[in-house]
Image 1 (spheres, rainbow, N blue to C red):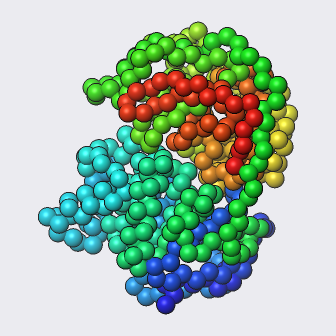
Image 2 (spheres, rainbow, N blue to C red; image 1 turned 90 degrees about the vertical axis):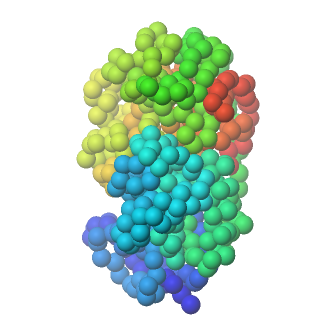
Image 3 (spheres, rainbow, N blue to C red; image 1 turned 180 degrees about the horizontal axis):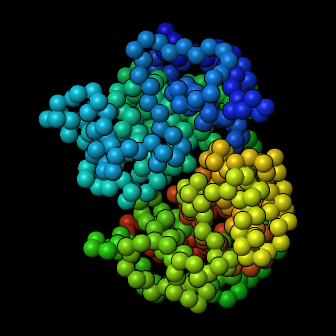
Length: 449
């Protein structure tokens, strides 16, 4: 029996824009898992939102959902879904709407959180969670509904390896209970064990089959020895005010001109908070023995010399068009405006110039926000999970850009959930079990896949 059926569905956001979905057909039966792959910006998230009924514009074709079927959706950026302030209240919201008695509610909330491996206080403010932890929380908030179909947008990008393993266990149990799953994913191989049908969405068309791209050879040419120190830490404890230390660092750490250093750690380890502290914008953190470009970090003192890419790129996009977004900081710092055109061309984003950055996909927003920072050619570039939401082609273009910037002297510190031993990084800083430490890991010739 089909729980969900799309029959020749077509959709576009504006009457004069190209079709995002072009006669898409898809049937989902009980207990099936479907995985949809496709290039960045191809419309995968739009398809999930259309199924969920989140798109306000009409579409052509037919969408049929069987009577009584309950849908659950976890968006690529879970922040846009939260409506309560604490962990327990967010998961309990569905139960409150279903009039579940309070004495049963707490147990159901705790069970849902355990299913996704999120062991935190029910009173913890959501704003204190990492993005990966927030993704787990939103999965729990959907599971408590006991949905018949669960829609997941890019889980691999948001979760560390432990989180992916826990999610796989959840998905297996859901399938065993005849719950259907539709997930959108740039790394479909990670879910091979649970997927029944692979699809590719490209140029508006949905075609069946597993479409894996061959690994791309990536060589870092002519690496120049690093220059002077631009960032230096003395041993420290990283603490929020009136809290116990989040992590410790027992060694002297430095970042040098021309380096690409990977900051690697699990969800919630403190990577984003550390990057924001380096930029001088993290509030409620005890003072750190830290110097950036010879200065104590503070909001607004670095000008164009330091750039920070946030994990949520939509928080730093505010202009009406992509081109205006790119040119804003260039105008502010008196830099050549053609830097914007050159970066957009280098990343293959010229076609987005007239578009609003707020209508772009999560991956495209990451690219535009990164390009706007790279166009300034800063001395220090801090990147919080910059590769999230990118297909293989854009993944390689971003690495080519970062390598070029490093060869021009920019020092780059980027965060990741996973080890980057096969990437063109100079070294890694590992944040694990509450300790930050350095690990050498440079390779001249690597494979990007």
